[in-house]
View (cartoon, rainbow, N blue to C red):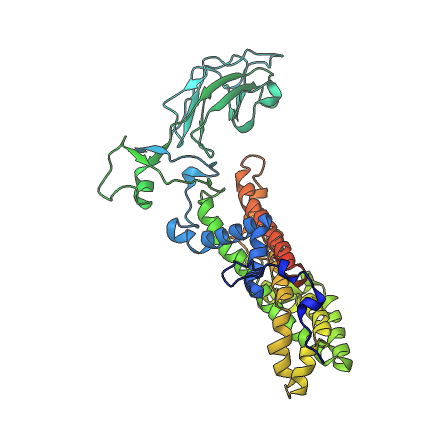
Length: 473
């Protein structure tokens, strides 16, 4: 048999150029990435999840390092700065202790008119007895003929009519009592005082307005108690820089920023520790139920269905009673126990469904044939392959627990004052939301941002951990 060469099949083989060893050859390759490296790359491509991750990291820094940088006692009360709105640092003048003022009563003017007139003139020359301060505002005016007393009002804006005079401060009884002292929650802001004469019962629809902006002051004793001046100092008239409250103060003069930091520790402690514990329990419970199957699976899942049917709020009340926590006391520990005992079935169901799929995979059967025991298969192969589902479940469980704590504290079932939490701060802020909205806005904003960030992060992890969506570039 004769030799057969390539030229017998390709007569023009000489037309083909031989590829030399020095000729560059294009290679198609991709970097070798592990599963978690690919998850991180996919997560970074999701802008919403990335921003949420940064927000969660910022909340962790705010909670852990914030109190070290902002060293203000969250329970320290400053009654001179009650319900202050967020502002820049303030300067106060040092003054002495408050001195009682007896007011002005005109002995040569009748306290009661001889007859009650249908109408009287408005009070004249409404003025201030001395310089108005945040300690007191002392008003005086000329008496009105025919008046049997006067009602005093205060507004934070210019009154637009008789029915818009503002907050009723008090009354004087007698037409000859022509002074009034206001010491009610004074701030360094513009006030409009109105004086309305009365016949002892009804008001005459005439009034006089005076505008004033009290000077910010602080007494020597208060300044020493707060460490603003030395014990030996008492230079009256000295200007002193007061504590800075960037988020304002609450209705007791406590710093809102310090209380938000302290409240974050309570809210995030419950929102992270409770989900971490009940998710771990749910993973083990659901993993065992899904792997063994059969009668054990049916019994375990029926018990999970029973736990789902238990009312959370009722058990929260029962746990508070069982632990001896009375009204007005913080129920942090009962809340933690209630969340752990009643919130795990959702995780158990989800993990069970994943395990039912994974246990039929070929590598599980191969490990079983090699002699692997159920405990090894569950903790070495099955649960690690459900880690993506576990992380997503945890990120969704955290905001749910935070919202639950906020709700219970808001209705008085959770954290009770003076211990701050975002929910209890919202409960306190609702009482002054119309006059001082910052006391409600800030804790509510922290709750909303935290819940939204964890939910968006959970959505991003759901996409990033899906192995079917791994990048193939």
